[in-house]
Image 1: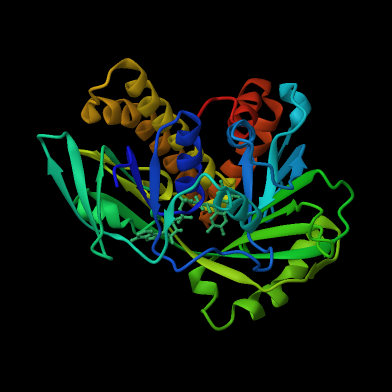
Image 2: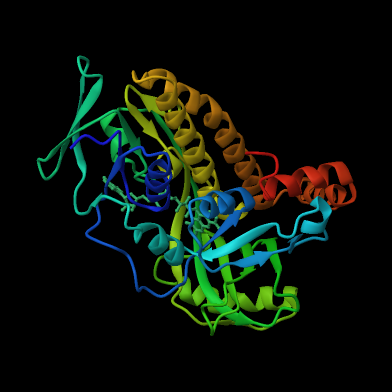
Length: 385
Ligand SMILES: Cc1cc2nc3c(=O)[nH]c(=O)nc-3n(C[C@H](O)[C@H](O)[C@H](O)COP(=O)(O)OP(=O)(O)OC[C@H]3O[C@@H](n4cnc5c(N)ncnc54)[C@H](O)[C@@H]3O)c2cc1C
């Protein structure tokens, strides 16, 4: 088998890259560790796509039900600071789009054009300088000769380990709790985010294909306040705090999922013919719902660079192609990661002066048109991050 690109990991980003390359007639194959398709699980977990990610999906014909967000209200539950964003301020119809993770995943994976090998993983990669390819040995002992190896295998990337790339990793000491709920907030196109001592609480509308639910909640809680065994208890004991802040009843109506939160970032995304993309290269706090959006921006840049190399010459120069990708994406991702860490630290602080500063900061930005526009454009992906 001689695909141009071998993709380790058939998650959202791995599947997108494969479909996108197919549009440029570039052959790829996906090696996925899990045993088979996800499908038919209850829709609980959501992703907030920015306008850029949605356009990338539209362009390859992927359509999933979504709930559009037109306004975002952010406030400090322990103080008076607040800031709001509206799509009208940037002359757009919407700021972002909530989709169910399973809907998007199934849509991407069920495309006929795919070649996916499940229950398999890359065991060894050896460069053959004569043919300018890499020979991959899979755990099934099958062999693949390929030009590029894209590591899209998530937070504990196997490909990054094989390439011995250096990682910086730290825990947020928080757990993200997520579930769907029924509630009667006035405007179905509003999202709210509350920073408080009970955690960072985001509530957003869900697509209409889950009839009994109106909203999704992503709630990040300090690990010192919960244990793995009392997460449900924590939700039911503390949700009334947010019900009061939002003046609505929030009726939990799904299983409560949880994810331990940490960030990681690789010093280099590339080594020989290998490249890291999406969560394999970086992961961030979900407070701004940007993780998969950074992955889509990575995937777009990588597919552009590979297609560009193909158009220019028959000889593929992997080092130059991948370096161009790394230059386009690494500092952008790092900037986002540092910004998220800044917010987590700012709102996690018990220091009185920092509390005053953040109240002043939020309300101050709300009154300063220039800064506000910058943040809205950024959230809606108009700043091209
Ligand atoms: C609670 C929560 C809420 C979030 N909300 C948002 C949001 O609103 N918006 C947003 O943009 N982002 C959000 N994110 C982040 C987003 O979920 C991730 O950034 C995104 O799913 C990463 O996609 P990926 O394809 O890069 O990696 P993954 O989804 O991790 O996919 C990796 C794939 O690789 C496979 N794999 C693993 N190991 C191997 C191996 N050795 N060999 C082969 N295959 C392997 C896995 O089985 C999987 O299929 C959220 C995250 C959390 C935890």
